[in-house]
Image 1 (cartoon, rainbow, N blue to C red):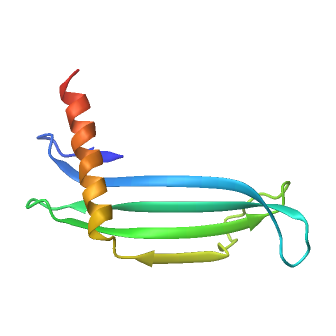
Image 2: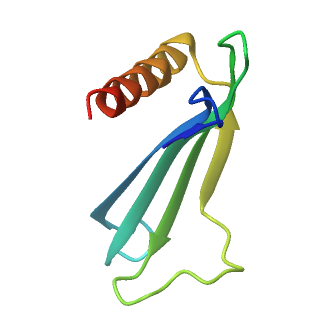
Image 3: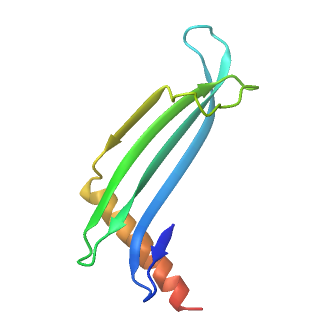
Amino acid sequence: MVVLDATGRPISAGDHVLTIREVTAESTGTLVNEYVHDSLGGRIEDDGTFNGTRWHMVRILAPDEEVGDDDPPSEARSAKPTEAEVDAIRALVAEILRRSDSR
């Protein structure tokens, strides 16, 4: 997702990937669903600097279980994005702008 200001300049960008896979719970040996959510998002400054955060979160749920608002993830960590990740976000922004200009 890219947010543009009134002049068409990108002011924020983000990307999210959710992976769901069936795994065997170590504690019980039963099949559960592992939800892994990786995201990167932040503000794009006037000088092109990207001020963002990378998040990695994991939830383990039984196949018939739903996440409640109070349920914390089994793993959650944030980090400053690497230069490669910032370059990838910049490339996504450039591609989105290129596609919108070609309409």
